[in-house]
Amino acid sequence: MNTTTLGTNGPQVSRLGLGLMGISAFYTGAGQDDAGGARTIIGALDRGVTFLDTAEIYGPYANEELLGATLAEAGRRDEVVIATKFGTIRHADGDEPGLDGSAANVRASVEGSLRRLQTDRIDLYYQHRMDPAVPIEDTVGALAELITAGKILGYGLSEASVATVRRAHAVHPVTAVQTEYSLWSRDPEVELLPALRELGIGFVPYSPLGRGFLTGAIRSTDAFAEGDFRRSNPRFAEDAIAANLRIVEEIERVAADADATPAQVALAWLLAQGDDIVPIPGTRRLERLEENIAAAQLQLTAEQVAALSAVVPPVGDRYADMSPLNR
Image 1 (cartoon, helix red, strand yellow):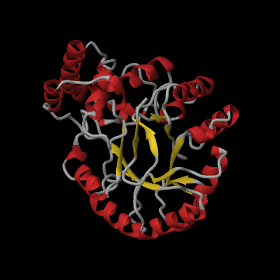
Image 2 (cartoon, helix red, strand yellow):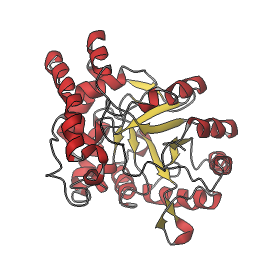
Image 3 (cartoon, one colour):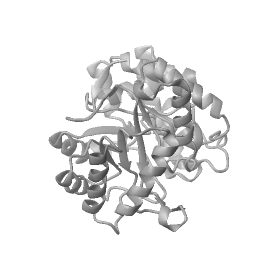
Image 4 (cartoon, one colour):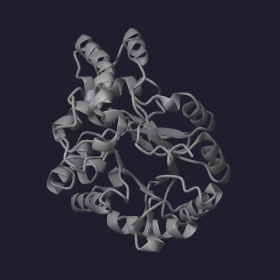
């Protein structure tokens, strides 16, 4: 697979990464097949995927543990760029869920992640959500100390506002920003992407397949387990799904014309938005991994890209509670 540089001074990574969340958390079937998850991780490496995304909250902890054990057993740690995240577990409060961007929590979090990942450094360390109680300058100051110590090689921000990104970047250069971006989440195009390009910061879209919706395989939430995050997501409400299928129908039309799958078309559209964009589609299955990887070779025509770009905006917010985002 082709590679690209993540931002101006970031690491070389594969054009598509692999999001590992769904192996261990939040979606139907998560946490039920660690062996299958390990095979998918190794299968990704064998197919040229070098950018793996996890977080301490996924499980919690189980996803980092699985990734660390898989890479250690295979002896392949040095082949990959590991991204993980902190800031949504308060380690001083009994490891309770909650936002904490304090320097003390940064230091506690990184030690746990290093141990679980069985590594001496984390390539990219994101603040998962911004903590309104802690100035971003304080958080980045602690992250800069970790960079000096060699415990992390770079840091990123997830779901941060443009103003916060600029403040963080003024303290120490940001390697990458991660935010939801796809054919049903276009908000980053307005302010975030232009600012990141101005500053030389890489962009990592998560949920590039709209949490599976853009594959065309989801017509209702009936097959979702009770704890599946999507059951409470506004875009998966019954009336929203019916309206949002208009987006899927256009993707399917282009897919038929391009002799590709809807997932490949959705990813190819995203890749066509710029070489500085590195999506991280997630999957637990090797066949889906191979399908996604093939999207990196799919060249959509200008007319196809334009048709997809013109799809109607989705119905429903990205989360039931939007308050922790874009701040």
